[in-house]
Image (tube, rainbow, N blue to C red; front, side, top):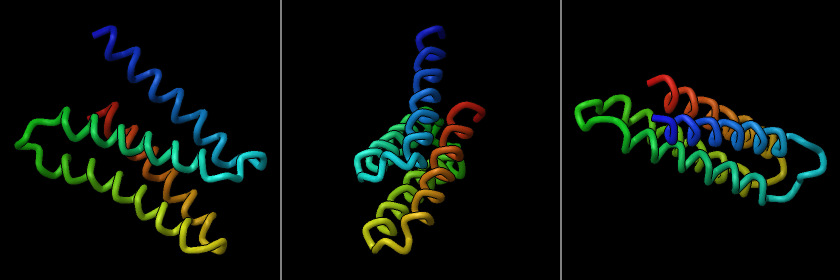
Length: 104
C-alpha cells in the first residue's frame, strides 16, 4: 500500500511540474509536450490495467484520455495556429486521467 501511494504522489508531482513547464514561456520546444504525452499514456495504461475486465465503460474512458493526448499531438503537428488548443487538450487529458486513476 505504501509503495502504491508513493508512486501515485510521484506521478501527481511529475504531472504538475510538466504542466507548469508546458505553459511557461521558456519551454517552447516539443520535448515538454512529448513528455506530457508519455505521462498521459502511462497514466492511461495504469488505469486501464488496474480496472477489472467487467468495468468496460471505465476502461473505455481510460483509453479515451490517451486518445485525447494523441489528438493533441496531431493538432500540434498541424501548424502554429493550433498550438494553444493542443496544450489545452493535453491538460484536459492529464487532469482527467489523474482524476480517474486516483478516485476510481
